[in-house]
Length: 274
View 1 (tube, rainbow, N blue to C red):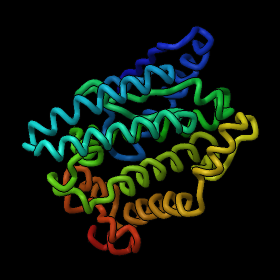
View 2 (cartoon, rainbow, N blue to C red; view 1 turned 60 degrees about the vertical axis):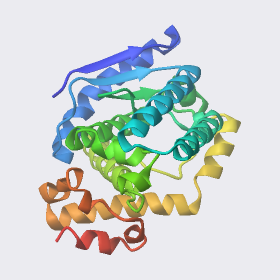
View 3 (cartoon, rainbow, N blue to C red; view 1 turned 90 degrees about the vertical axis):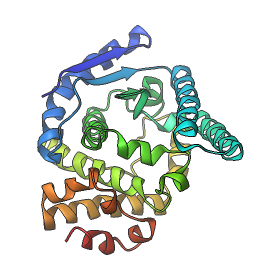
View 4 (tube, rainbow, N blue to C red; view 1 turned 45 degrees about the horizontal axis):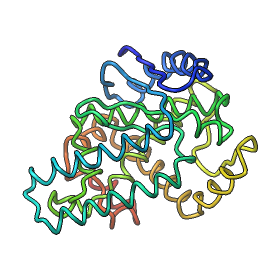
């Protein structure tokens, strides 16, 4: 099992949360590796950050990513300008929707994937002391770290690129793959630890603030809940039918990543593993 690093860069009031994260991670991380069949990076780092620090880090990351991709892919000035506009739009969306994002896997420092947690968002969502939610989060997010390690960061790079048409990934549905896999894993892990799977979507905590509950209800559309369920089930069906080793080829084989056209009829994606 990899070592666990928890860095609390927020106020002291969240010291108890940091300690709880470390304790729960000791339970979930071995299961992440055994359930997914993928190794985690070492160490596994969790950072507790403020909303402002999170937004600022995302902005710097976007600027660096666009510069790096522009050099690598030799993009035109027009393409780079469009990417910068897209990054600004994403930043505005994050500023509006941060309250819904309690935890997130990021690569703010190149080559150092980590789980970033916003205690303020957890508080707004009524999740700060929700043990079951913390167990699910610490099963779900580290699964993304395992995906990163298995693909040596390529899956994240392909998913987050500002120039998918130049990378040849415009038709790939990485969100269906990575989130479906992480939801499948957290369902299996929480069942092992808690006796039953912790719900993935649709539940609105009554302890949440009125602002959070309104935004969460709007975000949890029937379509989005159906997509989460379909992605999770598709991953599970592939693993049940073809085995974990066969499914895990997807992290190193771009041809196995689902296409957007296939996720509308998931049996097409499943069939390619045969």
